[in-house]
Length: 309
Image 1 (cartoon, rainbow, N blue to C red):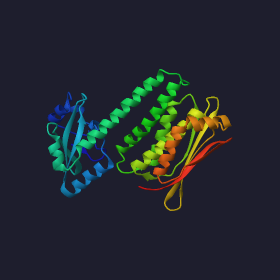
Image 2 (tube, helix red, strand yellow):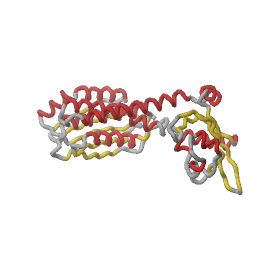
Image 3 (tube, one colour):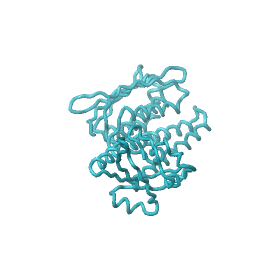
Image 4 (cartoon, rainbow, N blue to C red):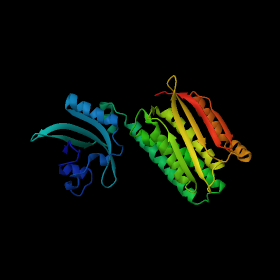
């Protein structure tokens, strides 16, 4: 039984403690049920539960749980509203359905395979990133192998950050939050450089596909700046702006204060060839046309794209 003020557990029976491999049912008291969810409830999940309680007085859903000892099981979560001594509570019942979750998924019209697959992808991405971090520690920053590993790390991380955000933002992604996370991760693996980030991004939401394309564009441009124009003995600056323009479109602009000498300009064009070709392709996919220049003030590039939610 949970209260409806802070949603803490106020009472449970012995079977609940046994199911979650507790030594005592008192361990549950004051805790929160969502602490044992493998996949966090999304806003859509919460809205669905409240709507079913309003309409039927009963809500059912399938949840993957993790016990105190770390074991996983599929549970049928049943929630009802009750009033005790003029106070509102929710009675929660969890039934272990691990032997046949598919039949319950059909009854409740839920896609448990997609949820399991998403969790598997997330874990695999995090594993790959951890291995790459370990590999980077074995190389010096100036080592070409280290630079290559970091390029791979940045590209995988761009996908992993989006996947993490998708666990609680289902259909549309907060763009400013996503790009902030991508850039902070990039800056963390290049901590030998002093990099100042200046972002001017409106609070808009995009579909996951276009969000990932923008993230990959930022990743490639950032990598080009770091690998070919930034120096450890100076303050390096990246400025990213996304401004609304006419016809429900937005203007994207990326600027750095990197070395604008002719030698570095050629290095950036040649060494960043693949990355800049990726930028051009992704820009076209977004419905824009990439334009860029390099001079004594650094690098400046941008394009305009339509907003598609």
